[in-house]
Length: 379
View 1 (tube, rainbow, N blue to C red):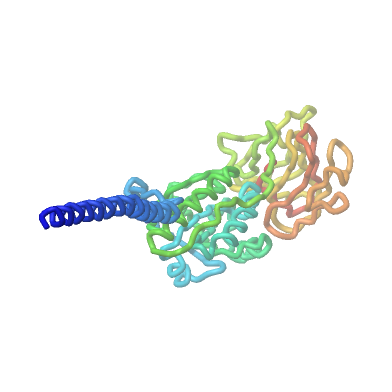
View 2 (cartoon, rainbow, N blue to C red; view 1 turned 180 degrees about the vertical axis):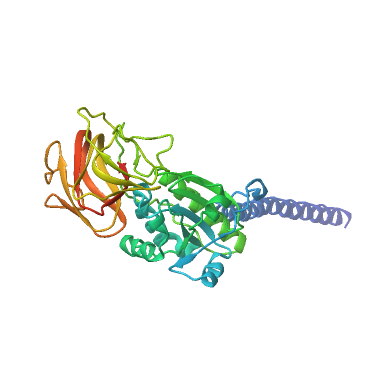
C-alpha cells in the first residue's frame, strides 16, 4: 500500500507540474499576440492622426500684423451697397485692390482678380476694388460703372474719390493689393503688376486659417490659376504726363515754350527731337492734369522705345496715327486703331501701338479741336 500511495502521489505531482508548465507555455504564447494587437491599435491611431493632420495650418500670432483700416470717405458703390458690403466682409479673407480705370497696369491685373474671385469667393474670399482716381474724370461714377462692365468685374467696387481710404492705408501706388485675414489683419501687400503666384498662395493660406478658425470643413484648392503674364521689355520710355501739376519734377515736354499754367500756348516743333520726350504743334491749353487742343489743327510727336503705346484721352475727336512718318500699319496698330484712325468717344485709356517686340519709333498723332490728352503710358 505504501508503494502504491507513493506512486500515486508522484504521478499526481507530475501531472500538476505538467499542467502548470503547459498553462505557462500557452500563457506566454498569448502575450505577444496581445502586444501585437495593442501595437496595431496604436499604429492605427497614429495613422489616423497623421492623416487628419497631414497638412496642419500653422498657428500665427496675428498681433504682429497691423489691423486693416476702415473704408472711409466712400462716395459711391458699384456691385454692392454699404449694408451688403458690411455684411459680406464679416469673417472673410479680404483682398483690397487699389486701382483706377485708366491705368494700364491696373487693367493687366484684372484677369487674375477675376480668376481668384471665381475660384475662391465661395471659399471665403472677398475682393473689394477701391477705385482711387488719378484724373478728375475718373471720379464720375458712371465712368467707373462703364469700366466695371467693360472689364467684367463682378466683385464690389467702392469710389474713393478724395483718396480718404487711400491715405488711411498709406497707399502710394496703382495697382496695390492689401490682403487681410478673416480677423482683419493685413498679412500681405504687393504693389504694381506681377508676383501673382505668391499672392495666390497667401490667399490659400489665409482661407485655410479661416476654415480652421471657424471650424469649417473647407480647404482651398492648392493649384494656381494659369494665366500668361505680361512680358515687359528690358527698357522702355517712362510714363509721360501732359498736366502741369503732374509734370512737376518729371517734365518730358520737349518744346522750348514749356508748360504755362492755365495758359493757351502756341507750340512750334523744333528741328531736332530727343527720345522719351513729347513735342506739340498748334495751340494747346495748359490744364492741371492735361492739355487741350484749341486750334483747328494740332500735332503730337513722340520718339519712344517700347512695345506698346497707350494714351489717356477725353472728349470726342478723331486722331490720325502715323508711325515713323507713315500711316500706322496693321502690324503695329493698337486695339483702338481702325484704318489708321482712333475714334475718341469716351474718357479712358486708348491703345495706339501694339507690337511683339520693343523698339525705337516715332509716333505722330494729328488731332482735332477739343481733343484732350492726359498721359502716354507704355508696356
